Image (cartoon, rainbow, N blue to C red; front, side, top):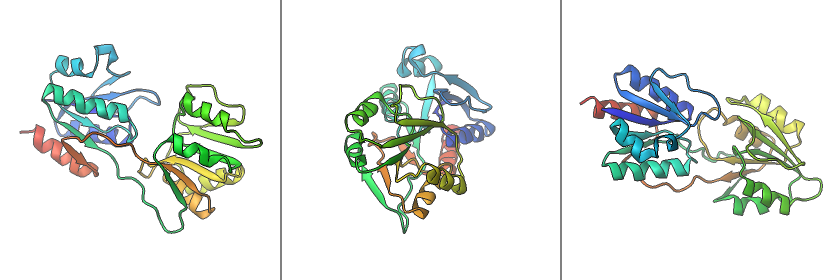
Length: 249
């Protein structure tokens, strides 16, 4: 039995190693945009179009189950996995780390999408984007509503895919980040609003602590709605135990 693990997160790498070490045959799939994962199992990179799509790949490799451990905002991949699994009559399981929760002293403003969030930035002077790659449509909307003197700081792990605005500075960095460094960064750029996705996890959580300490509001993009997987896990331990018990039979 072969498990297809859809990765791209630190949780996925850890699960891949643990499952492999327990004798589970698995293939680890990753887009390969940031860095190649150091895992001991078979790896494929670059998506499934090179194989004719996910459905064909499942058939070619005789995949027995899919484990989706992608980023919580990888809506297209997660949806495709559920659909392909149903068409192949195999289970699709999902692990997503729990979202961050509002703490005392936080000033969070929740938005369902960029269309809601961007107009709320017009009163801000220094916007810190920590929400990953920005699509061209987001930059186009920023251009139309840009306020004189407003500045943007964008932090991503890899170079932006699109041309940035003249008022936007790009900062390359890969977590984990410390609260001390996040405080210094926000003070250096005089940030007055933090834009984030509710990714969860500890690697980038320090920005929220820093924003709380500096009384900076957080504009939070809520997680997208995903089709139900056959089983959903919120701890790696529960996910690992379930997969081992199911595929070791």
